[in-house]
Amino acid sequence: MSTSSRELTVPASAGTARPTQPADSPSGKAAGEIRQAIAHTRAHLADTVEALAPEVDLPACVMDKVHQSKETVQATVEEVRQHLHKGTETLQNKAAEATLRAKDLPQQALAKLPSPVAGRIEGLMGAVRQRPVSSVAVVLGVSVVLRRLLRRRR
Image 1 (cartoon, one colour):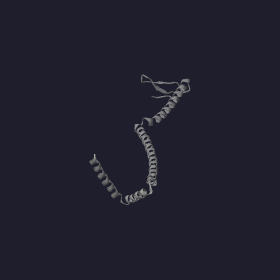
Image 2 (image 1 turned 60 degrees about the vertical axis):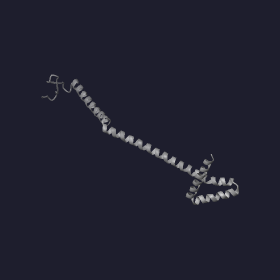
Image 3 (image 1 turned 90 degrees about the vertical axis):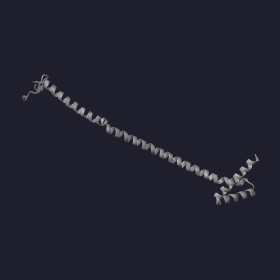
Image 4 (image 1 turned 120 degrees about the vertical axis):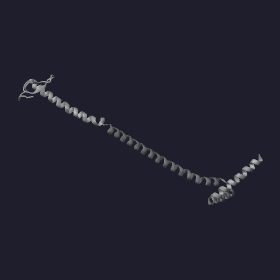
């Protein structure tokens, strides 16, 4: 395939080379424009391939989805923890309030009773506080005896 300095050869469909028009001619200028268009198209295609490559890379896409899911789960877990912490605080506050009210109830009940009865009940409450296990045993024993007595009478 020899070419002169002003002629280019292009393969023909039959497999033989044929001379083209010199570069100065109008068809030579058109060929230059075509080459520029081809170069531009190749550059554009290369940019498109580079842009699409990350989307086609399946392992990277899967890892991105895993990472996104992990972040979502971690955020949800943190929200649940905060919610539980707030709920725990609220529950502790309500329990403290109930404890304070429960501590005041015996005193309120004693204030409503006549003084001789209130004095005896205060003595019993003191004994229960000193020996709670034995007090529970006595109450259970009295309950069993009363239950048997009531069954016999029926």
